[in-house]
Length: 100
Image (tube, rainbow, N blue to C red; front, side, top):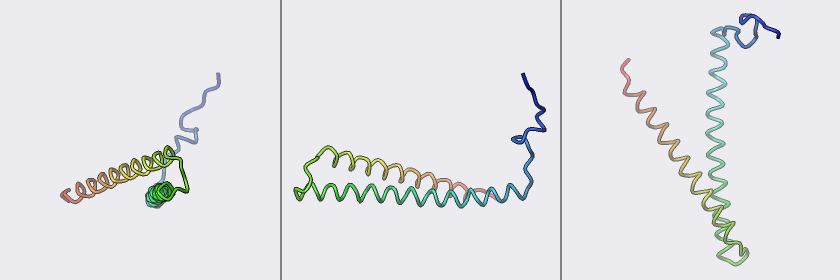
């Protein structure tokens, strides 16, 4: 069995302040990007559900099951987005209540 010292392992290397700040900037950008992607995904699902409803109403499409599934996906994703928004607002309000 091969053993190595903890301090020689690359995963236990101490982080410098500069590396930590650069990583924080990347995480901040990625959070914003992830949030925009999630909003775009919810919007896309809503548009798909709307087009499915319209196709079903006009008789172009007769698959009620797929239309209902797309509507439920859109509804659940919207509810999730609203819960995430509520958590973000609550966190912001908590930060604003903090005393400096």
